[in-house]
Image: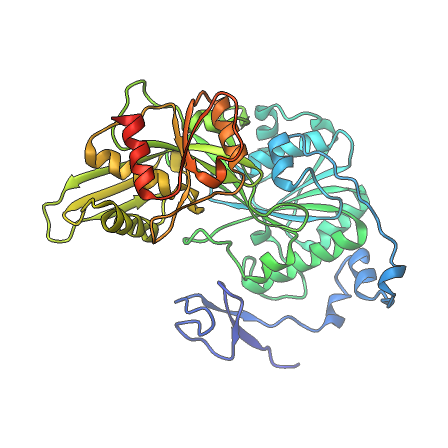
Length: 462
């Protein structure tokens, strides 16, 4: 008998090494290299894999001219949740493999269980559980009021070969795998959840999906750094990666797209977690703008572009005299480097010295600002707190700040202003390039540089 071979693989980037070491030389992560058994040869796979997997592994390939390949326009079908369809790119593509990750208790299984009920109305659906018993799944489905519960097949299984057999026998078209970290392939001797098992299991499911046209919705875990648990190859294998997280107050869930071969990779949607499941939030701007009637200094509303739609959020800033030699600069939901840049621009070109003040910036609702269009709003929020002069709640602010104090335009400016008009805003301080077209109900205050922005602030606040 041949000696068992072992390898050492980094769980963060997937790099392999001949021996264990504390730090991965490829991604510089510490204590992420784990030992696993090298899988046996492919000849051993055929003895235990399903017939469908065998036929794929042994199928002869044919080289064709690209012009000779028949184009197939696969119609998408709905998940039964309109916000989920929008994040997917307009619906579910047959034969796709989608990975849904998130913290424990975020609602991954709940969301998919609600979705499979609607899909089961027109397609053969199978729920594969590797973590819970079928009795637990049945109880949750009844509590959530999942439709078409009599049409949903369910099985508790962790063997990929057996799962493929069940899919073939049931002629399933839509399959949920909960979760990929519990799946195993017979030819790999590693424990479930190891990098090699996760990679091999995902690869086997993907091969089956592409040849048989079965759609897989796979649940995945995340590590302590909020990254997908397992090797990086897992992200490369799947067609789409979606992360489900909670807002800071735990009231809402945010579903974000990180990768999508069939749609935009920057979409997001919001859900409210209730006793009867996840409820869609079709107007998230109204939630994040739920402020008190009293104006407060340092509070400014801005608009972000989330995927294909604008999102109105409130940015708060607080300036306070520092009692230490090194004033604090603390941000929540906003890049601290951009905050430092805004303070420097305000001092150099606005004559506002804040070197002896603690400055805090917060994006209300747990929103993370990842675009530069909020720069002007943050800067005016800081100035508002410094002057102790509130900005009226009907004023919208957006624009990017340059190091030379120029105000640069934001993409989709007209759509941002229109969304503000729908939410009751009547004035907007925006870059001059975004003010070329007027929007009914909104007074446009166009600015080109910091001095004009501060003048606009005095116009609306003082």
